[in-house]
Image (cartoon, rainbow, N blue to C red; front, side, top):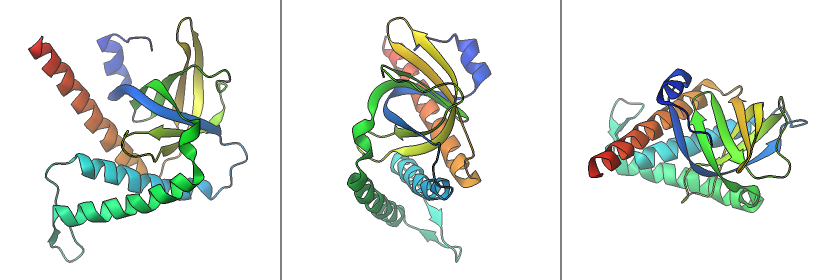
Length: 194
């Protein structure tokens, strides 16, 4: 992936860089109900990932009280376990490949060595495996905006995220912001340690 200058990163917004397992499938001909089913599952996944990453989390209940961190974690794990079992039965992970990727709040960029990269304008379901310990992908509806051949590394693809429900969009933004903060903290620690 082409390294951007710091001023370019700032202009494009908060981002997270990493190597992620990802895959894609065309959205052409997808049933209309699919985005809503995916959205619910993706919300549960992002909630669980955010919860697992928080060290001190307390959540309010409907009656105004607080539930313990442990109870919230157990509920999130059970929801995730149910989704994982369903996902494993489908076997989505077999089509994923490790790719250098950059995630923004409104778009995604990745480098693929695939013989058949997607085309500009193509609507896709992008499957992102955000945590190596969780074999469940986040599936985002995207539209390819750029395909650029790289001399040594394959194709760089950029796609815009489309039509996320507000609640999923909020969770995605929180996830990206948190990963961005952690990435910067790791960079600063490396600089301090020389």
